[in-house]
Length: 80
Image (cartoon, rainbow, N blue to C red; front, side, top):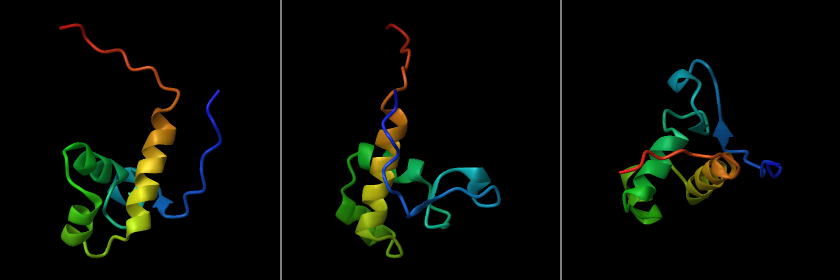
């Protein structure tokens, strides 16, 4: 069973913004973009410098949201 969703008051989803993808505070910055940048080796400081309208808590909540979504999902990987 999936744990309860954490309090994420900075994550928004609106059909008219980025096609309904989870975004940061209604901005055109998706959770996926933030998580992808972190996964690619960018630091939180790098993201804050590149996107001055983001705040530290925005990035932490994006990571928390992604973690919550992935918690119970089974991902089948193709064998090499």
